Length: 442
Ligand SMILES: Cc1cc2nc3c(=O)[nH]c(=O)nc-3n(C[C@H](O)[C@H](O)[C@H](O)COP(=O)(O)OP(=O)(O)OC[C@H]3O[C@@H](n4cnc5c(N)ncnc54)[C@H](O)[C@@H]3O)c2cc1C
Image 1 (cartoon, helix red, strand yellow):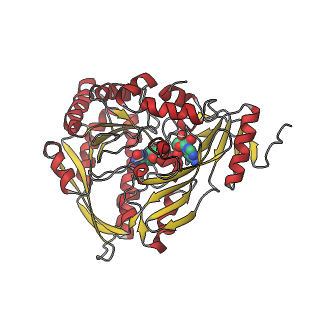
Image 2 (cartoon, protein in one colour):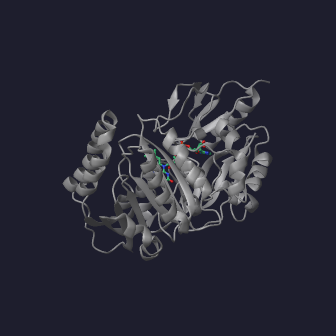
Image 3 (cartoon, helix red, strand yellow):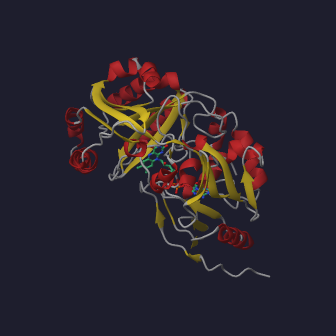
């Protein structure tokens, strides 16, 4: 008997990602409201020979979320499912910006976060989304258990007591192993962060990179190309009952919305029209980005608005290679006389044990390059990628890169183990797409 089209499976619409680097036209879009709906869609897809691809917030710059089959939008499979001490189970479609309000009544918070909170919990963990901090891992390192709908429509629990051999793959699974329907995260008691942001000399910061990361809970800096300055950010964890000194509403709007987004967008357009002005504009930008300090609840400090669209490539390199890689990127930009308006972002993470984590098995530094979305990034990104490869770099799964399965297998000791789990859980590639074929093989 042929299965009827489930009521939540609708005609597809053209989709594009946030960075406008990828688009797709899925045959169908499905909006399940429950785990049973997800099972129904997967069984329907299987019977019709269609692929299924869950979509989060579309914030990956790669085509990892693209599909010509059924796009599965799990926005309605969201919210708080259970709290057990510090273990919190969330629907997979929960958006990160929903999380603070869900955790507040329980006095809990996410231990670390990246720059923004637009992503879904499943999308962010599946691609290895991370923030900074030498003693902290990315979001997926906080995952303790997941529930998946697999390619045969079965429900699979993975935790350290159920199917534990799948855990190092399923915590950061690239969307290749099944549809995550819920994710259990280890949270921490709610805390404040004291932020200090200031411009500093490039040489001084990279010479003491190791110490700065060791001495600060969450240290990161932005290198302005064509200048000898960086903007450093030092975030220190404080108890929740310490005094808060939030950025005032006007100052916050001025710095985070106006200067960092609207004025920056205007500058980028000037730079596009007259690229030779970029070095002077960057020097000016290092002068206007001032010294500021504030203390607030963690998510208010970790996260900033990003309204100016861009494309990004980010590589994880061995921690101690960061200063040398940065010197080489600056030399590359100078040698090619490129006018690069976007700062280079530099962060750190502890080693972890997830098979496809960019920090798998090694202490890591992250270096991210950006270009305005109206500019072609490929010449710059491809050249930077060669520097990263020479330093055994690993690309962020959700950010642009040009690597294939063979070259990735050389830098991930567990690449083959992950592929074996994929072969076991999805032998017919119900959850496949072109990107997964490129990075994992067919
Ligand atoms: C402005 C901006 C800022 C960013 N800042 C950071 C940062 O600070 N740190 C960082 O590391 N990254 C950052 N990123 C990258 C971003 O966090 C990742 O690309 C992340 O994957 C996006 O999550 P999403 O919900 O948009 O997922 P999508 O891009 O929609 O999907 C990503 C992958 O997750 C899979 N997926 C989604 N839901 C499920 C599910 N339920 N089950 C199985 N698989 C699923 C998709 O199929 C796809 O393979 C940033 C991106 C942007 C655009």
